[in-house]
Length: 317
Image (cartoon, rainbow, N blue to C red; front, side, top):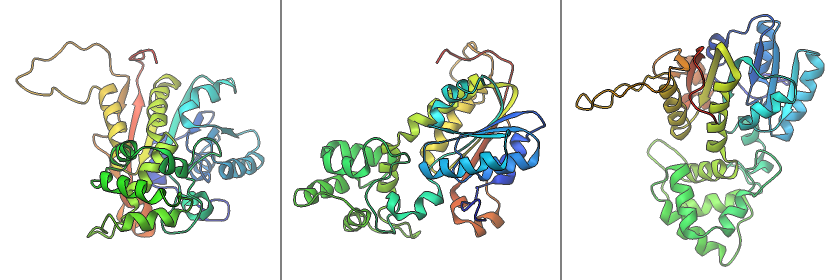
């Protein structure tokens, strides 16, 4: 970790091994962040790298890297779900590799004013960009029923209804504006788990995912990767919680025809599509113990990789 890259890129070695950039190849870093993956790709081989991010701080870092790696790197402002359109503006319609590191970065968590952390006081924002509704807008304006749905769906919080009810009661007297206001309220409803997980963890996760449409973006990015990757192109996706990983797992299993027959009592159905991806490995890779000890964020990381076949697209998106 250095001044140039304050964020530790999770499972960097494993991602680099899957993508294995070669001279002259085009690699997309769909979640640029502080540039850890992009820098590794550029140093590994004389390839061309495009980074995508919607975070203003990440764009600043990317602009500096454009100067450092003149002609070999470009930062594109937007979401990874828009990767196809963003690359098309650069005259690119095919790439050799795509890397995605899903979720909030430690760089964002460490900046209290961004409102992602329930451990530091800051404005209840949580936007990865500067546009759209904030987390404060959601908790102050949505109905109790909708809040409960959001918290349960995106945070898998078993006490979602109780949390939603407490939020609605509290905002009657004073709207929420700060992260610790919300975290402290949640702590009166949800107990800290035996594993030491903070009571507000799941609710904050849910609000962040909802505000930034993270699952919608992920689905769009996975479908775009099938169109963008040329035959033999590699995809590496690092996720940090079950909702993300389940989506990646199901998408790749379907496209690689790796789900298997659901039951021996159900007759095999005729294949409608040829596999458009080949799995690098069945199941997810986890961070090595050495990395997990050095970087706690990597403990929940799951990496899945796949290689694009020469089969046609499964469906028009």
